[in-house]
Image (cartoon, rainbow, N blue to C red; front, side, top):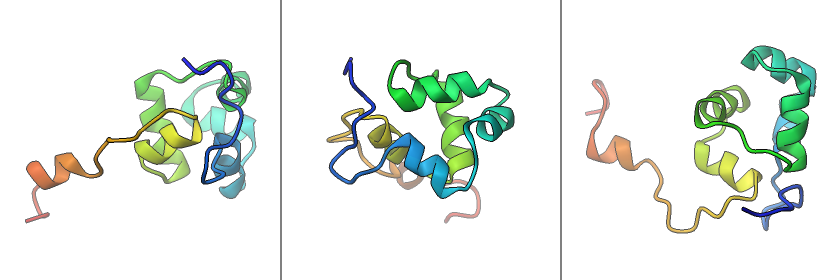
Length: 95
């Protein structure tokens, strides 16, 4: 586990920049997710990572993919494919 996830990645994306791009505070985002602002602050600082279900909700609220969210949290996603599920198992209406 990277002990300093608060630094930016090569694209300059951080969880904080994603949140600020949506024009919401830590408290507002936490409220939308049913969490405290402290949880958001801990994720933004890199002290903790969200559980997967919270990461999905977070990506949804921020309007980004899980891959972009992982990059913002300094998680190495090299080799992770995009939209694999949709290509292999299209949802009804995608065909």
